[in-house]
Image 1 (cartoon, helix red, strand yellow):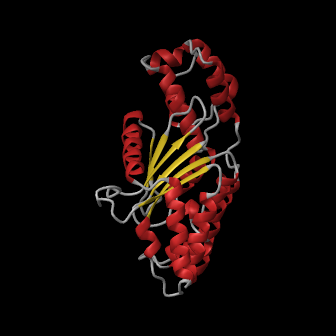
Image 2 (tube, helix red, strand yellow; image 1 turned 180 degrees about the horizontal axis):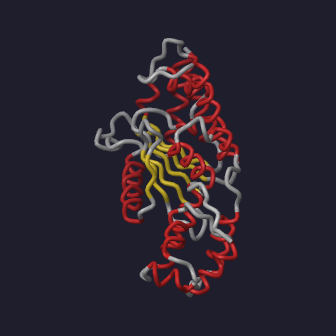
Image 3 (cartoon, one colour; image 1 turned 90 degrees about the horizontal axis):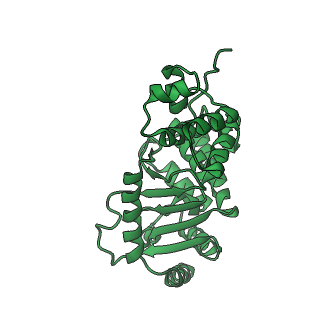
Length: 284
């Protein structure tokens, strides 16, 4: 029976990537022969363009001698998950592939570390602030498309109602934004930040105005951590939906960058006090 070709979703690619890590340093041809496959089939499985069944994951790992039953079961489970599930599937043909991949990566993460040098990160944005960020961007979008992007961003925030842990570094300078719509937008946004700072699964730190501008100057960073055996992923924002990296050394470097910024940021309790002070100032 011919192997069914699959859309190379981020999950399929991550299954293939983990199998590749377990294969190393074995050559592809030798690994394929263990299963009676040709190298083309294995190559497509590793790239995520061919679906591999959970049973084949277990059989392949058994032949490779992988001594990690829990890890193999997790990868086999992911391999069996149907393509196109999750709330984000409804937007598959309406947003870029990179953004869609990020949404799925974010939804699966156990821990999120997010730093933005200019604005409040999306997971902590109020609806009014979102609309300002989306509708006033240099590349304009239609009102209908803007509302769709707002709906997506709001839906993404559901991760904070799960077991996901968020460590967010928010620039204090973002609290000084002025909007033509009036101060109510920032009042609502600061209330949103204060509410988030009270959540047990959220650590929110402000990057103070006095911080040296080199901290965060290289752009926004998101580091996503997962349950065993998945490797960490780092995402770097851009206008096309961002780029996602799972190279261990590169992700480690970005993790150190995040930690260095966190070290100079205000402590969680002090950040909450500063947010309260800003809110009181906007109420006057």
